[in-house]
Length: 232
Ligand code: BEZ
Image 1 (cartoon, rainbow, N blue to C red):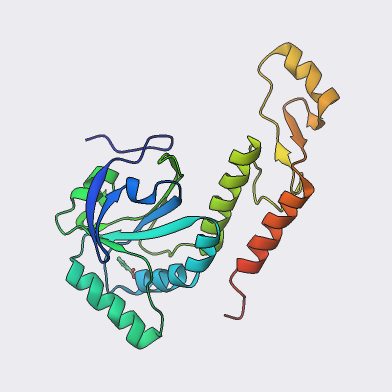
Image 2: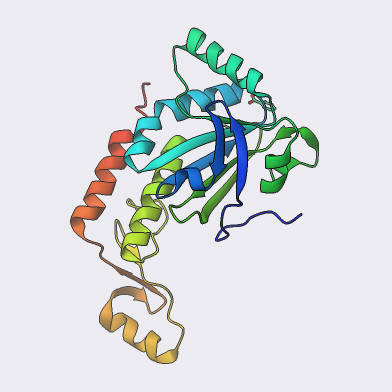
């Protein structure tokens, strides 16, 4: 079976969730969605991740982005775990979780580890409003995901789409070009010669251009506002 890759359409499927049956990707038509899988319910790192996703749910929604979890546990297990989190950690899980006890969904998405078919891997699919998979992240069992980075991914892709630009490392706080966008490398001799005349460049193959200042500022303010406080 081939698994979907970046740039592919998210495969159509009906899934059983803690909020009822959902048709993917149609259910999220016009929105971004993040499907994230976790190894198993009632495991410590996964519990910290669910709390972290829940605490950022409103921030994701500000980016027109929905969340949906997935593991090969049953609905009953998910429900009990969500209840446990609410009772013991005082955090409500507001998004649906796919119950996939036979592993059909996990297999379609390439989330079953060959070393352990009883656990889904820790993965993140970021899907855009046209149902195109834009990012796939895989994490090991021993490291929980970073919500600040997942929010930056969505915000960065939205800005990249709006201005048809590529964005640099750590955008909007890049070490060499700041909040500016990267100009794609020249592919002809003529283009290469023109680049330094049209853009600011370190060389013809490393040029950058401004995106509207207010857009970059808004992105920076948003990402700073939603960043997890260090003392939290
Ligand atoms: C955890 O989430 O803590 C975990 C999940 C799978 C294997 C080991 C730890």
